[in-house]
Length: 114
Length: 115
View 1 (cartoon, each protein chain N blue to C red):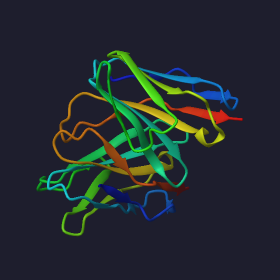
View 2 (spheres, each protein chain N blue to C red):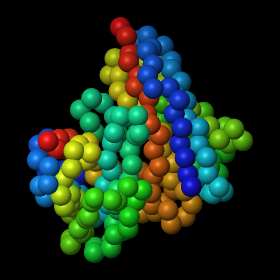
View 3 (cartoon, rainbow over the protein chains, first blue to last red):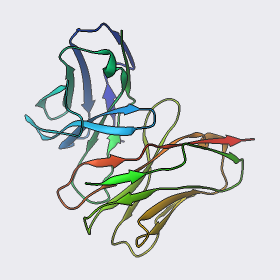
View 4 (tube, rainbow over the protein chains, first blue to last red):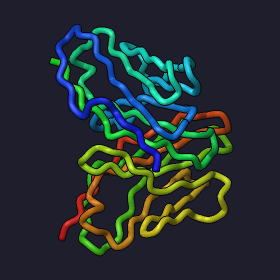
């Protein structure tokens, strides 16, 4: 079974702090993704990576950066956390760009910025 | 740009009855894929079913079936014989043509199954 893990289920941070969200997958997937989920908006793509050290902006990259130094690990960084970044963050991975290949999701991190 | 619309924010269904969740989409790609995911209160996203735009038959997976109407650009999910464990949020998502890794998600529909 594919396993995607995220470093924390819940996080509380203060405005202005630097925040790291870590995601690890154990199935040698090329593609990894970071989404944020907000009520009424569904999931919105922040960044994705199709290979080590490669990244592309998603729909809402402002205020975020990412790092992928190893294939299995994809980190989301909030350089200076703000209250409007309070959200649920979901990491996902997928193997190929085949039509029917689903993305596999981690359990999510609920981030509260005070 | 791709867009997914789920117009039902919340639904109630009686146990053992069927429920249909609506999803419409908009894309200019001739080739695309449609997905449905379930998100229980615990937060993890669970893949349910996939339909390719060129698939001739509607997809089915156990109690889940996808009512794909290409001309109307709709991909409704039907859950038959609802169970209490089906209470969750359900998301419709779409991926575009070859080389497009990204999924676009709808806003989701919350389903509550009543005993």
